[in-house]
Image 1: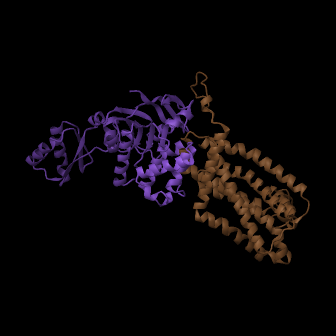
Image 2: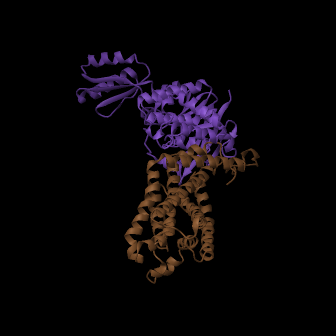
Image 3: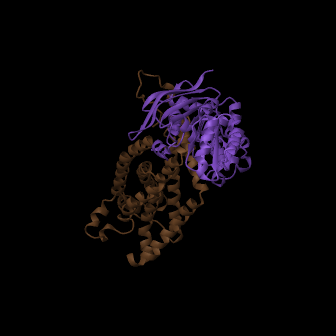
Length: 322
Length: 276
């Protein structure tokens, strides 16, 4: 299998601040590469370089075999880009938005209309095709944006935080669409802040933090590092929490983090749960709340880096856009 | 701007053939016209815009003619004839503000990112925005003229004179819109464009011969107003529509149009490339 994207040592600075600090990346053809990281970790900057919108200050990248700096036009022929903000013309109708892109890509008038209709149907927007995009819901706009990036049948699709701000229903719909595209053989580069999203969609995941790659691997490998699930416990009497912490540590042989009210510990085997409950009971600890949940991105970060995912706020986008 | 040229990267070690990078001028023009179509669609689809384009001229012409007319020149009919070329110029010049505003909006909303990720001419979005705005300016001219005709404005220059005056002011607006585009690409938000443009355009239009002859202004202001490029435009339009010396003001209008374009076209293109 060849690689659709190859990047080595990408560096980008904004006003002296390093947004990317030597990022290496490979995306296998036909697979989904998930780029996971908090705000400001360099996800958007990476996508902007790989889609020819930004020039790297150092390193190089090829997309479909073409250098993004020297052969941007060839790169643009192969890619579709769906950004974080739905980049559709709100005043134009769904059909007009898609016809415009098709015409720009060299489709004839009739061809453009056919292609627009096809895409609207595929994304469940056929009833809304004649309505202005500003009347669309958030989920519909994202779907229209995604449709717009697919007009030219790109071999490679960049999805930059495609579900940020979407409700669970719209999010699931978008996930289904992405799986569909992968079924058609499209290579996808997906950035996300959600571990669950990367887990659901990606074949390979790389984790970015402060412009560096801190981990690479399959979702399975990543979760093994961070723990499959997190056991969370609250005692009725917070005075009993230290005792409970000791018990859990003894059962899981993993250090427990606690904030004085709640104890958290990553677990890889759900079978520890009954054992924990039994021992707590034996020692007379009254449990207020006990649950197993998916680890948050913060916890993955903690496990991978030793620090939590700091929210560098919108620096990433501000910098990338100016 | 007729081709997307690949610039050598920082680590470029050798020359790479760039023939396939080139986009032919024909394609550039085609892309530009397709994006002009987008601009025109957006005007049509935006009720506030249509409303503004239609109602603002009615409001301005009637207010100025009937509120100030008598006080200015004894009777409103005389002031109407004096005012019409000026108010056409003022309306069109104010409309150029929209160019920077909408460019700034497109950048902010990420729409230019979408266009730039497509294999199209890099200058096409800018061309589309500017040509689309020329359509908007032309509508403005026609609307103001219609209102004038409705209240009895009968220019002696006739149809050809009016046509020449309209062409001249559109040419001047075309030059000015590069300035607007430059400001639009520099400012961080569309709102900033608007306030900056207001500060620039109010003195430029009101401090000209558009509403009052510079001779009637105080000593310190009169020479400034007399040499204001807008004064030349308005004087030229007045001459073409109502009669008088045409050659001088037309000459100076063309000179100013060239100067403004020579300064702001490269700046706008530079800011556009920097921002996008």
